[in-house]
Amino acid sequence: MNLFSLKIFYSLEEALKTPHKVNRLSLTKVNHADLDRALPYFTNVHEVCINWYANNELPLSVWQLPRLRALYVLNSPIEQLPANIPEGLQLQKLVVRQGDLRSLPQWLPQMRSFVHLDFWQNAITCLPEEIGNLMKLTFLRCGSNEIRKLPDSISSLKELRLIDMRHNQLTNIPYGVFQLKKLKYINFDGNPLDPTVQEEISKVKKRKQRLLF
Image (cartoon, one colour):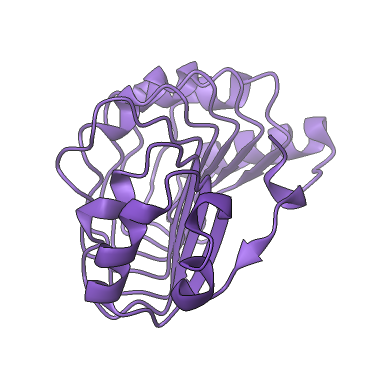
């Protein structure tokens, strides 16, 4: 299904008039209790975008949407994602930008459906060791966090096209990252990288002719 061809509903009040027709929700400054009460009615929702949310955690009802494929949480003080999620959830895109995340849950690298992860500008200190399990992942952005080391398994992300780790605390990068054949964009600016690593990055950028995104 092409999500971009579907109508976007910008208010719960409007969406609740025909909940079975709602495929995309984009909500700003929505009340936590109102959101929790309304979401179970939207059984056909594929994409949810929540902006300027006041609470530090999303209601569990978000993760219980049976057809959810893309979740965006923007400009919100989210401190954690749930420790457990309903079995059968097949998220493809998860974006939590400008939040307060400090860690990522253990289930994240087990959801093999992911193609796009974006955690720009949080307070994350590390990525899951098993992130290499996400064999479909093409987009990984974790810039402006506090990440000090990347797991070696990141070199297993053979479908990766973009990796953006700007403004973290990295001093080294697994060498296998430079060997990812489908990688089109690489950005590690603003990290205290070893000079030899910086040289490798420059070679990759030159080889890829510094691309697409």
